[in-house]
Structures are given as structure tokens and as C-alpha cells.
Amino acid sequence: MQLLIGIDDVDSPYGMCTTYAGALIVEALSKIEDITFLDYPFLIRLNPNIPFKTRGNGAVAFHLEVPEYYYENLKEIITDIIKKALIKGKRKPEPVIVFSKRENAELRRFYEKALTSMVTLSYAERLVDKLGIEYYALESGKRGLIGALAAIGAVPLEEYTFELLMYRNPSKRGRRIINEKLVMDIDRRYRDYVFANFDFSSKRILAIPHGPDPVLIGIRSVNPLILNEIRVLLARGCKDLERWIIYKTNQGTGVHLKRVLKISAIKPYDSCTISGVISSDPLILKGGHVKVRVKDETGEIDCLFYRETGFLNKVARLLKPGDEVIMGGGVRPASSKHGLTLNVEILNVVKTVKVEKMYNPICPNCRHRMKSAGRKKGYKCPKCGFKTKKAEKEIVIKGRILEPGLYLPSPLAYRHLSKPRRLIGWKGTEIKYLVELWHFP
Image (cartoon, rainbow, N blue to C red; front, side, top):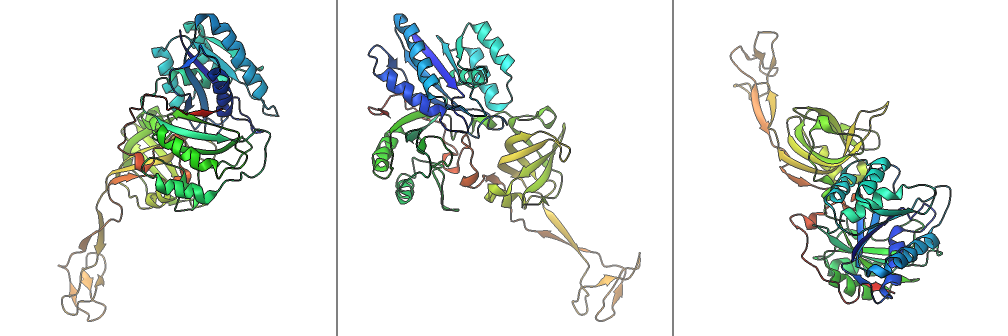
């Protein structure tokens, strides 16, 4: 029988990582002769604006062929692996494992909702009861049910990329010892196939995390064969390497911003795209953040460009009232200090308005700029004294630095789901096979 398995919320601020638990599961299941992986393991990123989830908000799923007789044993194996992997602290993980014997359109809708909005646990519980999906909450809470259920709802991915994740033992702490020059060289060499691994403008490596989790490095690519080549090169420059795995993922696809909403329909924590007209001059806030207002026929909303978005923040300063725009990002809830706000991740300037500048007329005698002679008295030249009531103000159309087009943040501000410039126009991939080596051990 075919089986979909989803897991979430194995990680905590004190260590561990849901993808590492997924790698442990792959190691165990690959040793069982009767179990077949029908696809790569899936790393599914969900709505990045959920405040109580990690920045990546990722869950893991598997698509397997499993003999009916082995189903109960399989559940025990996976449950035991997750229990042993947990690292507990003040913020206790609430891991959940779900098992589904078929794909389902309602599961797909659940994934799409979890990708773009706030999903309640009660909604997830009602759905598993309705569909008869088995799930196991391994601690007192069930927070992981939402991500685990959404992860299996994402299968099969319509647009996807791949990520090579290399790990150290979870007991290891401290600075990751990796040859950073090698990472830069790899990014240059495979530039047509990799993305969001290095930001050359800030000279920052994006592929190396800084938290207590066991990930040494994660290289993102559109091709798993390329990742296998990169893995061989990286292994020489990564100390403490324990294991590695290639995940199929929705990272770098921009799918969280495909939902287009009217401003009146926006809710807190939504990930969405709006279209409208700039209705205020850019306001530079403390810290260098930029705020503008955008309106459509249903309402108006503040849009914030954080200083950390780099290039995007600089572009926002050039916007003018009347510019037609399309913006995508995450919605920050209103507070006592601000209203509902769209934190902008992507800006498409559809049309810019002409900026007209009015000048007093030039004196026909001495070519000096004249001044007003008083209300309804015309103009007087301060240099030669010439007066006239017939002259009119000169209208000059000022050129705009900002041109219509798509504007993205600097790579340092990319989110996991953000589509980088080098993937704009790319519609996914047709890689349907498992490469010979896609994990170790």
C-alpha cells in the first residue's frame, strides 16, 4: 500500500531539528527491504508569519510503498525514533506524526491554508477525524498536528527545489567549522543551479545556520544531481560531518504569496499579495525602515519595508503617491502603536506617475527667475525690475529614477519560501527520479 507520513515540531530552541529526525527515519527505513521510497523526503515550509513557530516553519513528509503486514511495525519504528530525538527545555516540543493511506483534496486545501494564513489546532483535529487519519501526539500538546497534516497535504509538490542538508551530531555545540571560501567557490561554480546560499553584496554566507540545531550547512538547488557533486566537495571542508540527506522542498518557489487579496479581506498573520495605488509619500522611520500607504477600492493599509531588506528598502524611498504597485508579504497585526501592516517581501511597480514641478517664469529681459508681485499682480524680476501680469508659471516634468519592474530584497533578507531573482520565470522542474545517492547513512 502507499503511505504518506508527516512529522512536525520535533525541534526546540535547545537543539534538534525536524529535518534531522527525518534523516534518522530515512536511515532506519532504508534498511528495511520491503519498504520503498516513492519520492525524496519532503521538507515543507509553511506560513512564515506564525509568531509561535520557528522562522523556517518547516515540517517533513514521506511518500512510501509499504506492505500491509508491516504497517504496525512501521508506526512503532518511527514513533520510537522521534521520542529518542526529542530535546526538552522550557519550551517543550509538541511532536505529532500523521499516517494517511491516500492523497486527498481536502488535505491539499489544508496545506494551502497553512501556507498562507493562521490555522487553528481545532480545525486540524476536525479534519483528521473526518478523514479517518491516524496521528500520534508524543507529548502532552498537539501543536505539531498542523504542520504534519499540512506536509502530507503538500504531496506531490507542483513546484519544487531541492536542499542538501549536512549534519553534525546533535550533542555538538559551538561554532560550525566549515571552509567558507569553499562555499563561495561552489556558489560561483554552480551559479546556474544553486540559489540563496551566499549574499555577495554583504559577503555573508546564508547556507550556514547559527543556532543550536545539528545542521552544519544547507545548500539549495534546482537539481539533485548537482547537489550530489556539491556534497562530495563540501565533505572535504566540513568538520564533524555525521550524516547528510537531499530533501525535495517548496523553498524558493514563492508559493506563500500566490494568494491575491483585497485590502479589506486581509487578516493578521496572512501571507498574501495586494495590488493598489500608493497614497502617501514614503515615511522614513526610526531605524531606517520605510512606510508607505497603499489603497485599493476596498480600503487602505500601511506597508513597511524593513531596513534589513536592503535594496528593497532603498527602492521604497523612491515611490510617489499615484504609483500603481503590486506588493507581497506578511501581515503584522494591529497594536496600540500601529494599524494592520503588510511587511513587504516583494514589490512590482506596475506604473509610475509623472512628477510635475512648478517654477516662476523667467524674465524675458535678463533671463533671471522672477518672483510674485503679489496676489493677482503678476510677476516682478528682482534683478532688472521688469513687471508683467501675462506671464504664467513654468511646468517641468521631472524624470523618475524609479522605473516599472519587479524589485526584490537583498539576499540576506530572503525567507525560505522567497523566490530569488535567478528563479524568476522558472516554473518548477520535471525531475521525477531518485538519484542513486541521496542520503547517508
